[in-house]
Image (cartoon, rainbow, N blue to C red):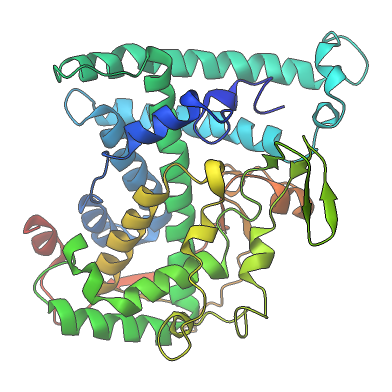
Length: 395
């Protein structure tokens, strides 16, 4: 449904194995960029809008990587983000495993739109055209930017355009879901927040924000990121795979062409691997526990690994480390002077963003990233540090 009929099989994560799949991945490798410190100025001026700031900042960063900063106005950038989110919302609906009969009865793709039970054909027709228009609109601008480099590029127009699309889809969604989960976890676990801030103060001091160069010296921050990825699997089932040949696994026969759905959420909560798996405990990844690193697992498997994995991982580090260095994150205090308890549920990332409410089963099965529903918290500058504006300007 999502791949062949809607046209998403040209994206990095869904394209068939081969040159088309590998080419965009190679194009993405050199495109790395640190997160924009403007996020912290926005957070300082309007902390109650932190979820909006996360989405805007992450989206703007990845659009800058895909298209460059010059010649791209903020209005154009936000329009691009809105169109990407709209396209991916429809993709998430179509990519829910076996949500449509055509996924397990492929012959249905040949029936006409008016045929009883073929309502999905109209959805596909409209969604595919919107996707085509969106992707084609990127080709001329991106190709122009690459031609200006004067270095010949082996990528064709369509590959270039789908690289940009896949970069946003793979990098933004996972980062937004991960950062939303981070704020949620810090509210619930102040002990973890305090220990992370103590490490930051000891390593970098109080007069600057962390940089990527500090990462090797911040083991507890890295452990927090690993635990975020484990505690709430961003992609609970990843991208469905197809068996390329008959296989057998632990006595189970897997026929060629079978759809394989990976229960990443279950693997992350396996009590045989992670002690007290429901507990948020970053120390599990440090000595003496040294439990299994889950970073690679969180972003999928094999040729369908998340194309924005490395960008998402570096973005999570710089946002999380800098936020903890500059701010305290606490429960919101209500009008009665008492702390307001959090009770947000975890849902598919984009579906929560657009208030597209699905049944719990579909929310779990969707391929869209998972994060908490919108929630409120208190975000205040840490005392004894320079102003956030000054810290950000000095970086």
